[in-house]
Image (cartoon, rainbow, N blue to C red; front, top):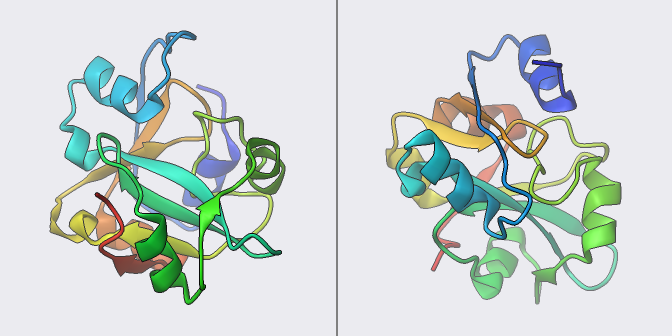
Length: 157
């Protein structure tokens, strides 16, 4: 497995993680759900990384369980914004340095605020993209939250 900015970020900070790989189906539309299915994981423990914007200049990452949707209103509230929208896909890729479906919260090109759904804290391990489609990293939720200085809030519906 070739290193990605995400795995490099985790190794540089001595964060314990494991790597899980699967054959990504290019026809898949729900990347997090695909990862859960192909790896035999509980979709509640697989978190997708979404890029949101305040419609002005601010951007942030929002992590929610793969089978759930992001409440933009709750994400905005957690981030202290009036409103949140999904970021333009090209902007998401430019800000993170990752392709859609492979956006990791770790090792992004631009450091962005992070908010994670509070359900994460009740899990023993969570899985997030490792920086490319078909690559997941598993780690303790507390390690993810601390490494990213993330806020927790009820942002999934």
